[in-house]
Image (cartoon, rainbow, N blue to C red):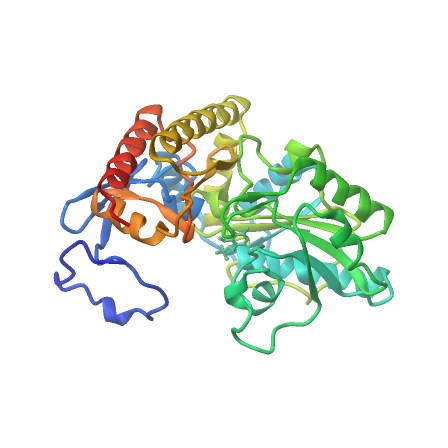
Length: 398
Ligand code: PLP
């Protein structure tokens, strides 16, 4: 990405490991849908920490929950109960229809836990079965096991040898899943809208078929809702669109509105960890769980969820109109997780151009833009985003 701001303000950017190419702006403040960099330049943010800031930047409800809780109790250690962790676990079991929660600090850690739980279940109840069927294109995280579970092409050659035990089926193709089931299969793991792959949705019918298949073959269904959960698609969980409940569910990203919190949630039958199998120093700390409680209380309200659907429809309509005007492709996704097919491999250059014009967008693929604004984004901000994107496309020579 080209650099658009003066990087020479004394920021020690070389003190960070160089894990990705970043623009030279340094962000110093955020509020709602807006970010400010070190030069005072303002940006409209439709990335929101990759769908993390579900209530926008620095929402008062999260700031207050953190400030109040920080003065009361940060963490007593995961070896003891704390009130916020217990309260949030109860809320998440109610909202998911599942029974028990393990809190983690990132989506990858929650998914790593889901993989371990499925293997434990296989060892205890399925004669040592350990294989998990996942999907081409899926993204489950960046630990070694979750990279191995992912079906991302760019991961294939990295960090060999991978963790064994994952086989890949094709999204929305039940026969491809059936063909992979053996006596060693213990679970099927699904990302219901493949976000990193370019916002490719599993159909509700396919999700229901997977639920029936896993029931019939006594397999666990693991659903990774790290990107789709916590209201992103207009329901608290994406699974609700298909009317199913998985055996194991993972949540992360928006769960605590921008601070690190994720959850591994399981049915009573699947929740089979024994002492010593799972843990972690920061897991379920009271500070993050207090933020999680504040966010979930807000996002799970029916009127909040219908506003997400409404704004999702508005954003989809505006993108569709833009696409017609500029001869682009289809709009995909659900709620406020949408993608626009650019029909040409101009994603990275377009993202750099909109960045220069004060708009943050993400291109998960060279021919696709992804939109994941705050769930509190306003219609005016949606229109402002479309105007800036339209202007960038108008100036674009790529
Ligand atoms: N699963 C899905 C579907 C994701 O979108 C992501 C992150 O983008 C992850 C897992 C990994 O989450 P984290 O980056 O918090 O480890």
